Image 1: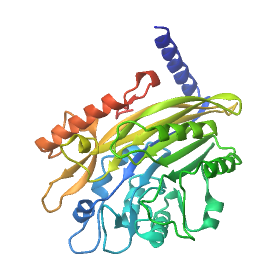
Image 2: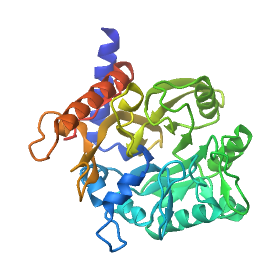
Image 3: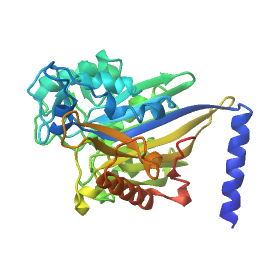
Amino acid sequence: MKKQIIIVFNLLLYGFNLVFGQYDTLKVASVGDIMFHEGQYQTAQIGNTGKYNFEPSFRHVKPIFKKYDLVIGNLETTLSPIPPFSGYPQFASPDTIAYFLKEANFNFIVTANNHCLDRGPKGLIYTKRALERNSLATTGTFYNQEDRDKNYPFIWQKDNFTIAILNCTYGTNGMPITPPVQTNLIDTIQILKDLEKAKLSNPDAIILAIHWGDEYQLFPNAFQRKIANFAFRNGVDIILGSHPHVLQPLEKQEVLYQGKKKTGYVIYSLGNFISNMRGETPRWRYTEGGVIFTFEILKHKESGTISFQKFRYIPVWVWQENQGLPGANFQLLPCAKYEFDSKNLRLTDYDKRHIKQFLSDTRKHLDNRELDFVEQRLND
């Protein structure tokens, strides 16, 4: 009862302060693995024109992203200007994807993951250039050491906020990191150096996007927990995890940082955002979607004190419209919107069953009332 009273009081205080303008607010949204398997780019092809249209993939989530200041995604493919394209195990996708990510209101893409070198150094370089041509900020992979020295950690700024963003991966599937290109690996000595450099910019928050964990496992392993604790003890505020292709929960850790108590938040895996990973078996059942993970950073206008509020998730499920027919395409559906009302979409019985199952699984797995981490209502 006492805990409930405290929560209600804090919510009232939070609302009071916002209403009377004592805080500046930065709204952040992030997603997990942005993947394009063979079926996705094949069905996106426009006739024999050599052009591709990925607008349907993002049309239902674009309005959601528009509400956020910083929208982060993990691009788990390389981009190429011309065929041949390929899906798993070595991804290469049409470079027009960068344009459609920007159109969908993404503004920050992290690229350090196990597929960033699937097309070697040239693929890494072209991917980075394609993102930058479309005004997407990016970090995690670099043209050369000079590029890394100059632009990493990435210091993202908007209005009264300065955010440091770091990104690294457990590996590159055995593909060599051949100089001059650079890819950030999970190296605690290097991460410590990068964090010290980030602090020189006096950031309001430090975000670490990290590619780690065991594929298809619903809970983090000991290594993930160890690295998360290390990161928090050295100044990281928020950790955004990717790679397992399924959702792993949010956790709060209390640590000592510079002699004071500090709270860090880690979502161990954001799951797949968009992909063609699906099926009936338990292993694949959890791969058909992921979440849009959202939170707010509050900065007191007078003291500059920072706090993190309103951790929420929005389940999204990948729907293949007209499955198996010409003109099929893959669309990300906010699950709650179509859980009971799908009259505007031609959902099959398979679709209806799977979207409800994914939503039920996600709620059971992620809901954490103690952390006030619950599903976000779409009209918020």
